Image (cartoon, rainbow, N blue to C red):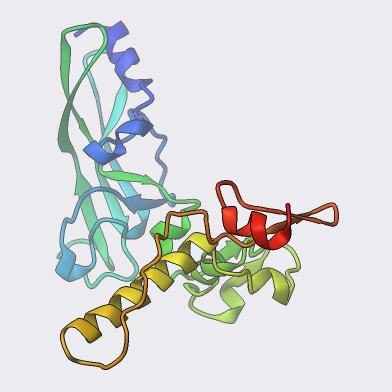
Length: 241
């Protein structure tokens, strides 16, 4: 491998490969940096698993043949973990290099590289926050609905929640998406028919709606007029348009 090829590999944008277990080619690490363990369950019983958040407390480095300094081991403190390793203070766990291979340009070049399975954790998505208890959370709740609930409900205390801008009750109580309401209605109808068919309830079978259909969309009001949903003949008849 040449130095030019090593630089090319370190600068690759592999964000689209996350489903394959990819990690950034190059990240800057420092002692005290918040990080998140990524794509690895090192010790689930001790709480050192995929998505665990920690703080870098120590770094061991080496220099490759091309003069690049790289990290061989990071001592990461996982505050919520029960880790206790002799010689290491508190809940510190050594995160070492892992192996990941991929193929990239130049054509036919295959590189087997090693990386630390951690990423910066200055900010995380709402999906990553699910299942976690965080000491401090800074959020914008204007989206309302499920996103606002997830963002605001994972802090340890009221004092640890910082809301960026004023928010109203109407913004928080955002109506459920129409697609979700239709899907729930369809499931309730299927449940009803299942009970009837198997003798667990009495009554008539109901027609099950197509949750992906636009025929039951409510009319939209535009400049004082009701506009029928696309492909909906029933609204054309009832509204007279």
